[in-house]
Length: 471
Ligand code: ADQ
Image (cartoon, rainbow, N blue to C red; front, side):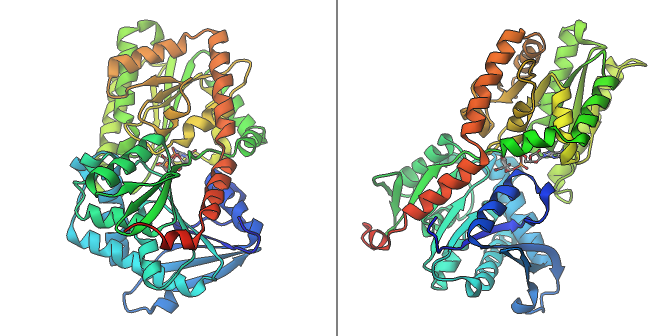
């Protein structure tokens, strides 16, 4: 990034650079913000009455060299922009679940209204040489709204979730307006080559745009560069976390408690995209078809509460409770519960201990932008005696982690078979796969992701080029 440019990060919710326990992404963005001085802008999480003026909704505070700016929203804004269009329309549709999408008109209006409000409140805080990095599906129209207010700064956008193929995208009402809004950015970052291909197909086949040199696309007189930047984790930070007293204590306790068992672990937000019922059914199938694992294999599934006011999330919660109860009822014994299902967030500092105690991790989403749990599990394994990662081919992570045991989570018997293979894999094969996975996880770590994205955004900045674009 240029020496003078300040970084401005905009995301639905912000992280606090002063809090060390924030997690890889928040830490990586905080590092970038701190390096050049910066501003992090987002929703405060607080709701206020609609009558409160814009300037009274904005809160500014300093965290070292970083300025944090948070905005209060009205209850209606949160219901329509956040719970509504973002999480009941875009989230399911972008995860290929049109059956769960609700495209109510009020949701769409609220989504654009809040993006306009973000732009109106952010614009006066910007400097001419700022570099702006907008995150995720909540804020797709933000660049359009900023441009409408006369902002000419470099603006990049990163989509953390998948971009579905055109046949799904076109089912979203006003998909053309939404997709055209991406052309007000200078750079659009996607998680995988598959997502990039979907973007390209949409622009060329559906919108009548054209492909230019250097992964640039032109549409309606504007152009944008769309590229793949696979997100990763902070490998060193997570490995250090694994050496802390708390992580080691968790590991020792789990090892003692499950001394005679083989542990399988699943860690997720409770979300229908994560394939949790299919995962439990695959585990049930393993127990049904391979009795030798009864009384020995135990699945610990931690599912963090998420978006609980949305109906689809209540449904998935009930389904999981019923399934884990059924498996325990049918296969359990007085001294052995096959499934330990916990509906809670597991403290981050204890996560490495849990990962390390498990000889198999199940990361089997039906669709996922990347999935960082897959990477976290691998990097804290003992390289001399590593566990095995069973990974859905539909997680973005699968594109760069072919050495995991890749599965189709919809195929329950095949996933059960992969679990059996994971549980019986030779030490030599486990080591070989682990070493290969470590190489790609280190290469694509969170620092490389941030560096590559910001470098691309900075390199692209050639105003003359933008004006010379074909109509
Ligand atoms: P998420 O859907 O939240 O993120 P993921 O990448 O799996 O998905 O997890 C993010 C973080 O949450 C990880 O660091 C993980 O340890 C933590 N986490 C998950 N479940 C937890 C639990 N039960 N208890 C404690 N911690 C838990 C979105 C996209 C992903 C993409 C990320 C980053 O949906 O596809 O990988 O953003 O771009």
